[in-house]
Image (tube, rainbow, N blue to C red; front, side, top):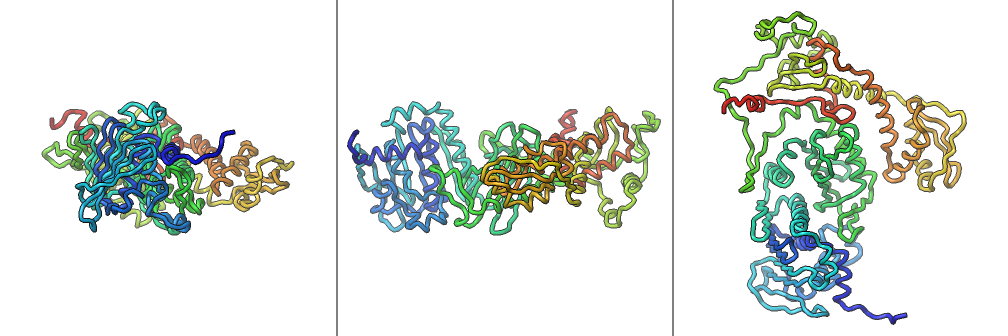
Length: 614
């Protein structure tokens, strides 16, 4: 057996670099995080050949003292933590003191810096097998510049694993995008091979933050999202949540930040998935940019070498907070909120400038909206003359009267609110027994009547189900299940929650449980599989989506069978009643399967179809 010997500092750093420096984007991430921790408010990034030839980051932070320059390139040298207690409440992005040493071991690194207290700047370079350093005076403003050349020049095996220049730069862009989304107060400039890619000015208002979001995550995302801001139990959540109709084929527009740090976390992912449960089409992914703020001592950031993952000290509290706030934000999306969204945002691809587009005024006269008469229906003999010439009189009141006839319990407060044109407008016709055509102040609305009624029926059934305790029935012979010890403990710990769902479960051994009662609504389902899924989620998250999902699936099937079918002829009054119900029903923009229930064509879009004003 070989003798034990001490590794050289360079080899030790190169081994550490295997965890920290995966590719050029990893280098950019570590340097930028150091700059932000140093109080930088401006970042200038120059990249050449996808970061393989050159990575240069200049900041205007507080800089590094001359006597600390050599130490800054040593392993486990940091100014951010001093004792173990500091690690329990890390408020900075970096803290381990490994990054610069690791980067210097696999590149030619030069660090130049000046503090306000120094007369002039100093720079340090590393060279030789033992990573000797040399400090010399230089010219540099207050702040720091880190220059990394010839990445992996001394580790050919690592260099062979790098992808093409375009691919590596794409990864760098993604890192900088996340930094830019986490720190709106910082000016960021990015150049690649001398070409300006980003020129992002610091944001001082919510409007400027929104414009940066549009620049980095597409204007369509900003236009088709709702803002969220909530605070409770020491947690604060804010950001943008994409409408269910603005979904993606892959999870490429999902950003989540914890105290300014971009992270991936399964507690967060589960809460988001649960919130979008029955409003997202299968196989599609939601889009969001969300920011969670909490006390640093309540989140552990020291669980992964690249700091991409965190561990919440009260994960159940965080999960429930995220789910409840996102679920409510999506439930509150209504035709009225969608029709009053922001103006379209236009991005100039040449300059990167972002402007809000105002609707074009194509007609010299102001368009006046008038609701269609209530007298038209598919059963009425309507002549071409009658259909083409609008009838006179107060048509809004006619429609209100028709709505009240179907809803005799309408209160005086409801009457006052109905005097204005409702968001979904008023029905004018039915197309092929499938679609409702309605007219509102924006233009034309098309409604899939079966999908819309299915959602309305579904939501009403869920409310009725929640307002009454679940009816349960005992099983003739208790179902004996072999489970893991963790799941058996969960069954014992959450017995009251199981009882709320209609299950009576008792622990009969270290790894066995007995199911003595199940809810009536799930009697035709597979109770064993349900219980296993239920306990697995309880053990991992402290709550369960399995039972609710199973319940909702059954209710959705019932709602589908109880909704109006295609080719059924509706009267104008019936169509308007459906439109009014859509306006007050949560999640009415999607059916139970996540498909859209209605679309809006604005007058501007209709004019473009017919080349009006051109």
